[in-house]
Length: 131
Image (tube, rainbow, N blue to C red):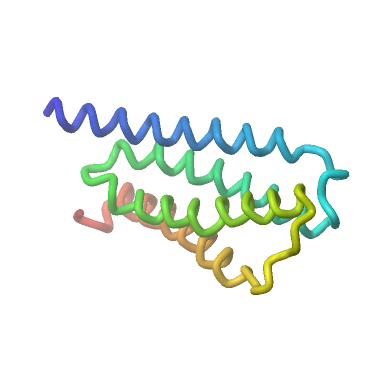
């Protein structure tokens, strides 16, 4: 029972840390003049938005029996969407050459994994899933 309480608090702190990280990176890239074009600016701030969504999902998963089921979706969403956006934004701030490959598929996978995590939480809270 004590272990479950510690793990619930750990997921809560991961969620709060995700909010804090998203806020920090959002404040770093808040000015449009730092980016070379509007598309880079929008991709960067969509990564910040997905970081906030993942933080909210982490906080919601702490109330479930096994938080890792839905938490894995939020972790993969953060890794595939937010970290990639921060990396591209960093390269754009430093005026490095843009990435040579298209990252749209990876970003789409990250966003859909966040949506899958929320769908899993919704189905579980409605009683349709037993685990």
